[in-house]
Length: 503
Ligand SMILES: *[C@@H]1O[C@H](CO)[C@@H](O)[C@H](O)[C@H]1NC(C)=O
Ligand SMILES: *[C@@H]1O[C@H](CO)[C@@H](O)[C@H](O)[C@H]1NC(C)=O
Image (cartoon, rainbow, N blue to C red):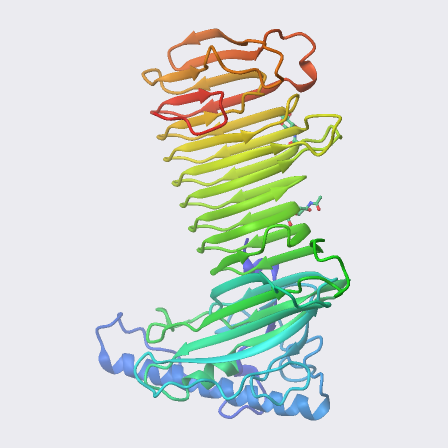
């Protein structure tokens, strides 16, 4: 995903802003080699501060201008009509703001407590101005819970944490969102205000979808033309976004009913995600949490269509779905407890777990959504250079499981539930141990006193192909499963008892 290509810059660099003091004045940074010319660094630092001041001036100007013209001044554009709407796509700008296409900024906080639509906590907490002393400002927004909720951030100053919780007893239609921004002033008492002037935190909506509402954090996209990192001297600000869902829509609603949300999405790169929802508190139709370079932890997410995407950070948690679940990261582990509900339809409930250079450990309960059938399930787990460990603590009689587990340079340990009937294929390098373990005296899950048959049809070095069933294969094609377990340079073990395979 490339921010630059998929998003439209709306705000542009201070240089083109008419009437801004000293617009166009900054000189090109001199190409001094990194860190070896203290005078140049000092100049650069001064230049950076100058840029901040200039931007601050512009921000104040426009804020003043647009306030004068309208209270809801930010609707539709970062700052209404005027100097901010520059020609788009000029690559020479040092920085601009990116607003994804179709996203409308409704109302941006001014952090000053004078705003009527959102509550604020001025004055910001100020430390005594020591080096790296944190200063925090907060803004609060409410969004109706019956909307398609979305939260996003853009730009290179946006990183931090995102937390989703549910109120214990607050009822009503309000989703409360609090955004804290913390800066580290580095001895400069005005630094916090500079940063507040640079970021936009707004309620947002979508041009072509009236049912969408959320909160966005927009920060400049830096393109420093002098080379080097403009933030070298500063610690980036830190955002803490806390979203609290109501317990229920109305107070007379039976409190045992979970809150139902049609759509909830985040697109928050470099934000850790922490979801702390009570079991049976909320059900989502569509839920997608997306980040990069950050972990995603979830206590109890129940969603029909559930997507968790990040990179370079682990995914951990308990996930329940009745349709489709995707957990994908890179260079990090996935540790998940999954509950998959099957349905009467022929469509399989699917779970897709993917990473690399990190293990996948998942306990997956297959649960029947109906009396009629055991349900159809597809489970895929792929990684590399790490192990895959899958257990299936529950699975209904006559459920169909299509399982694939792939890795390399790491073992595969799979323990299927005793109800599993179907084929299996284990592959690894020729010298590795491939084992199918079944207990002769295993109890029949249907209680009919049948015996498990394990029939290894084809066994050669690095390859085992077989099938397993209770007593007879007859009339089982409707729910015949398959398990494909592959790795290289490591063992593969398949067991039929649901729980952990002990080595
Ligand atoms: C499920 O969620 C993903 C990610 O948000 C989305 O692309 C897909 O369209 C959704 N599927 C359905 C059936 O709504
Ligand atoms: C489930 O897996 C099977 C075999 O791998 C595949 O043919 C089928 O299309 C999958 N179904 C879904 C819904 O993913």
